[in-house]
Image (tube, rainbow, N blue to C red; front, side, top):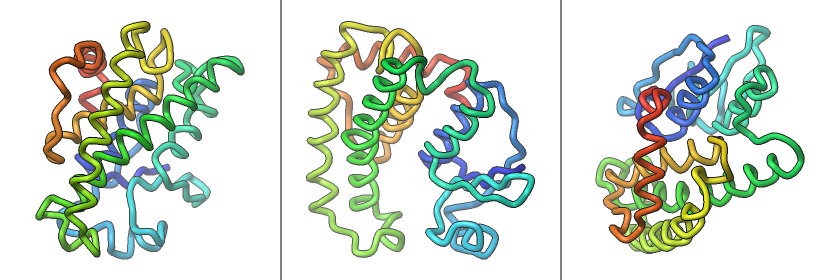
Length: 203
């Protein structure tokens, strides 16, 4: 088994944080995305979309998409449960994972990919207006999330989950996307500080 990893890029980091929380070690194959190595044969032959991360199992089976990779490891190593427990717990984690993905992670990624000069050769066409339009969307979601986090410790309930991992990576990615967490979002700031202090956040 080996994991083709993209370093500081958000999706590869999501998987590394997940694995660290599980205490799972997987051999990493570093891929320099800055040098466009993800578009070269070792990655493109395994993932025609030329995106990372890519997990290759011992029998050669390929799994792509960060959350799909995390789900595989959740099934193989159920504890600690990072996709929730029981019907209700799993549904809540799925709900908040998707909310984080679509309303925060996706908006931050769109802002970065369509505005940052370094992405000009990657995001074709690069539409700065679309990038700017996504900034307030991310901020509005953070305000909603702030109200939710006034009632609980973690994104989906009382236990850390994949939803927190997606939120952590998204908020950290806000810096290069030039978006700030509003100062009045004190619950978001408290939550982000807490999950950033977990050893897995450094993965």
